[in-house]
Image 1 (cartoon, rainbow, N blue to C red):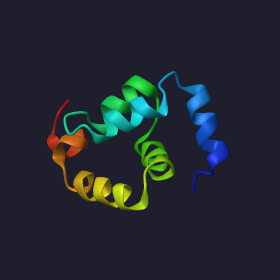
Image 2 (spheres, rainbow, N blue to C red):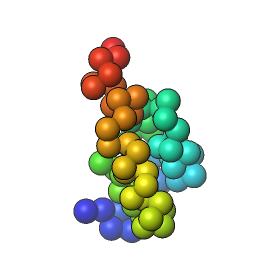
Image 3 (cartoon, one colour):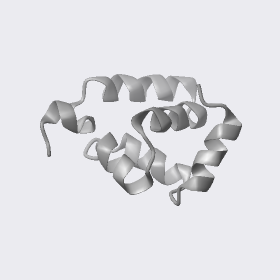
Length: 80
């Protein structure tokens, strides 16, 4: 699990702000691979950022939406 100090280090390494990362993660058309390409953050790191910055109910809603959505996972969507 990523602690708050570790999440802050992730932001310092990357040029994108947490607001931009959250916006990309909420967008249905932006896959985790696209987020990783733009920011260098893995899917697990994006999930940790979302968990740290969203309310518990908002995080659960987001995870429920993202879990089975093919567009968020290009490997499931067969996009190359």
